[in-house]
Image (cartoon, rainbow, N blue to C red; front, top):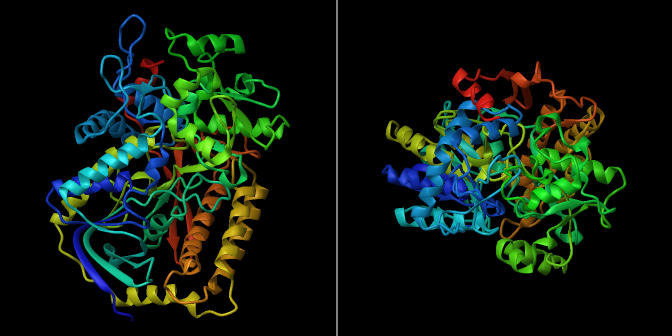
Length: 605
């Protein structure tokens, strides 16, 4: 076994996005020593991709008569449960909706600079699935401002940051996680970490798809480390296809176009110039009566500030994504295979002030001036509602000493996440994970690292360097992306999913003999070898869960089971766990919602 340097902390936080940094702040305020691992650099996190705003019911926006919109945690709770098609953990949603306003105001106290109302309050904009204007924002750079603010605060309270380290395995003593193992990406040198508690905040896993808003880091490392350590995964079939990703130019396909564009009045049109979202077939029964029946009426609503109703472009993301997909399949797509998103009617000054990043993004990357011409968009893999199963109160996983928060954890968003809920999610549950991990750390001592586990992982990592004439990890990755993009994307069928599963299992077999010639220094092929193994297993879990859920609900759209089956599948989460080398899929009954929360759905109609 190769010797490696070892660091010791009360709490190890893996991931330095919003959830990880908020956990750091909570743990340091509780008096614990904290180490933070970054796969990339501090501040480079997918939190910045959440551009439109952070959802919290501050009720700052006023009606023309001067009264404030009647937003509340209760309305936010109802919206989130409905948006998630009631697959959410109700207790997780209750905690979230109640605590989100305090977490946003806390950001302001830390130094975050939000857009303002004329009265000087934090400005809020409408977003899909939210009844009221609830997205507290900084132009269309809200995630970037949150990362900046949390990073400054975390540095001020003190933390030790280890950047450009790929973490590949959680180390256990019995059923308890006591540390982690990884390597420096530059040198390939191995490193171990001992900790009394570990917080996973590693984000999502979109890179197994061909077109995604996720950066290169999103390979599911944290998810699969938790799975291999014995943690349960939940709702893994639920992958969010954000309705509007760039489709042109080709090299930028998949890059996010924030929902804030539609929140600021952007409209979707097909190749005929029609606002196709007004077609009743795209408006499910759940929303009947909330939206206009004609384009003319909808156009009036866009400028009618006395009416809280929103245009159909701001239906929940799963609804809009399916509508775009169906419109393109019907032959009404744009020149480059998407649809048009048009915000030109808002005027150049307004667009540059409210959507500066979108203006710069399209102008720099595509030569498109969105103040003068529409954008071309297509659904892109953006977010994962599923993930590690955690306790609502503490963010504890099913493995002792391991906590998880943010996108890697599941339970809050159910079958579909409402825009803006991801940023308040990382604030609320990043804090709770840090507090709970601190309490756990104060009751436990450092564990003993098992050299056998370390040696096994070292051998596994070094194998591609020793293998000659093996498989190219980039070839395996490309074939996996083709299989997932073709057969496990928006529209799914049993035949397609079985085809994807067959391909994934074939690729897993081929991946046993990956080859990455050279040594560990500056060897991207060697990094890709570990990443692709994580993605192959995560993809298998996604596809097996999608096969098991025989209904359409939220992000799970089965053409062979087109209806939502509340009687059977509305009461069950799918649980994936490790059974040796096999994936075990079971179901778990949803906890019954208490009567006082059930009543909210009648009261907020």
